[in-house]
Length: 368
Image 1 (spheres, rainbow, N blue to C red):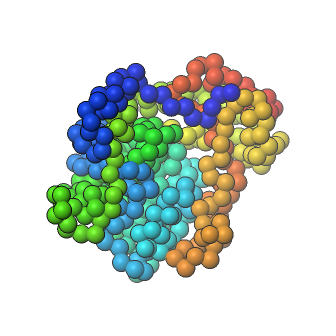
Image 2: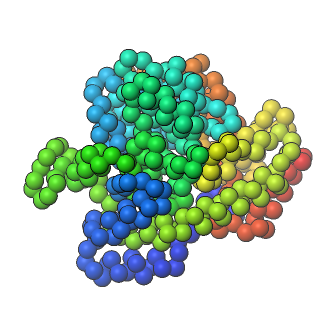
Image 3: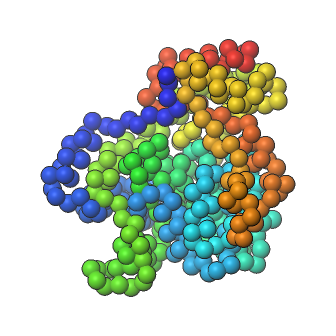
């Protein structure tokens, strides 16, 4: 089986983890600070604050945005549920803007149409490793006096016009096991604002600036030094990791181009894709539907996944939620895309033979 994702830890990871174990300093300490500094240097952010997972990163970012009850956040309907859960946990109201079928990201014009007098935050999602149209979203936020919170969970090292994801607003990254950089669980919040960074660090540490010096109600959102030790070698190699993913994506696109009933992913002008997922769209011309294609590939030993099978609010737990303002008719592109997307393996552990095997299997099923 060629898996849809694979964890690839550099050999020095074991030595770093053992050093932490032997030090006796397992909780947040010097290794977390080292990881924060390394990622800040990697993406060009002034501050990186490590937390215990990507959802926490979103919740904390929304907290420091100063949301009040009834304030609204405009985001993408085509995302993992953590995006919506974080908005609700922060006490805000979620509104949704439709996406583009080309980059799978929320569109600035639909975001603009979703803004109301209660809107306080624009929350674009950089899906599959490609950034949303951040210059336009940044301009929209400035025009309306809104805060930008970036869901960059899948976009470590992705850029728009040379500027990295996580540096356009308050950035939120996940370090879950399948991400381009992983600590098993973990996350980063990024900002260039000194005051916001200071507040983030206090919030993650039970509201303490120093031990028993409480400045605000806070949380335990700390990362451990053990997790940081796992992440450090990957951050050091992030450029290489992403280059390998780009090479693999290029090989898949070359092998699947013009395949009947299949649209390969595209890269928008000015953007650097980091290929957290390689996601194709199964069109009406396909001889079999998306789900049948995925099932057949699994039987052939080709891992695949649907990210995501429905728009995020199209579940019983959200349909009648008083703080979820959405209907399917308002996001037709996202609804259609959710029924057609299929992700194929693109991770760095693939061989050239694996890529050929994936392409041959897809073509054999679609008649290409």
